[in-house]
View 1: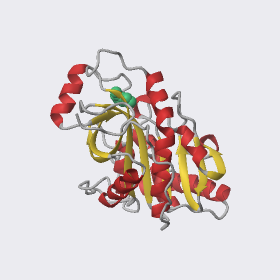
View 2 (view 1 turned 180 degrees about the vertical axis):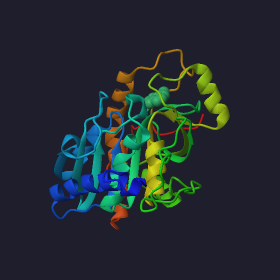
View 3 (view 1 turned 135 degrees about the vertical axis):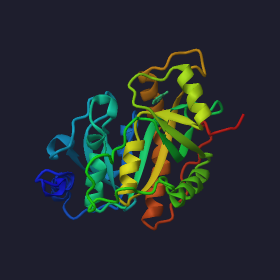
Length: 300
Ligand code: HPA
């Protein structure tokens, strides 16, 4: 039996989840979704007119197990522009397979979402990156050791061998950089290396990643970016550097510090995302609070 004729294949499961979300949403159908990374859950506060749907009420959604990750789909709007926020994500290290990790992307695809903004906490591999810096993903290294598209191919969801030349849309990267500049933040491009975790890296692994061309390292984002691209969505990746990667400084890396750095940066990332969401809705964002104090990127 082919997988597509199975009653609980990926497409049917995604459609069932999408249907529950659609019913709860009334007539709202946002074109943009934002996935909130570690410590960035507070970003939902920037959005008004919120409608919260707990993951537990959505069929086939996995359950989040990580401190710092709530589990809700949230409809919200900023200055009239609608967005769908995913508060809490699923990670490979929790024991989920990559199909579960990326299931929300399939639901977004079936909901008709066109653009996905992925946010993440990362370690700065490149020596000149500082905690608090926000980087724009230009490319990635999938070092998880698996691919979320492995398994039977369903042509209704995408191609068997999708092109990954431009996972992170150049158009969106340019837009994010322009808007960051208006906020007084220099947004540098970064290559994200995705490792399975959950242990942080060793200094030797960080040296390896540097030699491979990585600028930041994390344990998420890449599987979702691959599936979002496969599903025809345009992807923007914004990563917060929450800590220097292992071995850069003599201090250990602690999850609490990662969360705290995320919380500190939430207002700035929120401003940036608001501006991008408005641009995508065809609205030119007005000027708001240029940041004098935010630790913008400064090359050494
Ligand atoms: N390594 C991997 N993932 C991370 C890190 C890190 O240093 N910081 C935040 N997420």
